[in-house]
Amino acid sequence: ASVDPPRRFYRNLDQQAIKFGLSRPDLLRVVAASSKSTPSSSSSPSSSKRSLVIIDAKSSAKTKFSQQVQVAFYALLLQALIDEEQIDDLEIGAEGGIWLKNQPAPEWFKLAPIVSIVEDFMFRSTPLAFSPLEQLLRVPRSQAKWQMTSVCESPSRCSYFDVCHTQTVEEKKLSQVAYLGRSDHAFLLNLRDKLIQY
Image 1 (cartoon, one colour):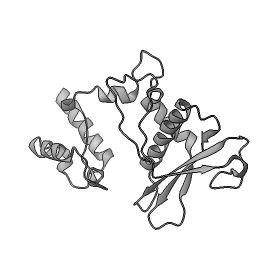
Image 2: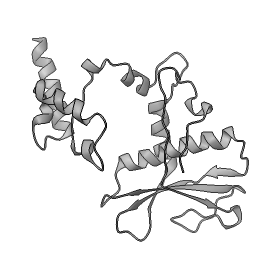
Image 3: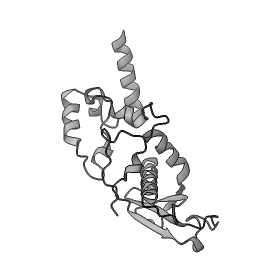
Image 4: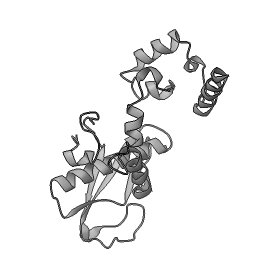
């Protein structure tokens, strides 16, 4: 299923500055209200609504936080669509799933804590204060701090890969150092900035 974010998804974000493209959750399961239980247990929720359970298929061997964030993003997006279309008997399930390669069933996780993190990052807490996402997008490209990692090529090459790779080589960026972890990368950048100040 391809989902184009409805207008209400953006909440208080500047839609002239931020535009989300189509999203494609891998698997959506509708669970009838009469037969509802959380996917990982047999406890029945008290709601009389149908549940929309979001599952994303991944080729990795273990679940990553970034994959849970993706499912949480889909939950926010689909909830906005449910609200926009006024589908009163449908709600997002309490758990999301990551279906890993060669596994017989998805690994389940509670959506609420991850959705809360994604909401805090994406949306404004007050109308006049930019969200962390908006702050990040306002940094000029020349001043942005970034690092090329294996994720840039997996599962397929990022559309910005060639630009970033060229910039890495020309500017002799730290990303040229093989197997440099993110925390080490951040530490070295911070150290460089402190040395420049003196």
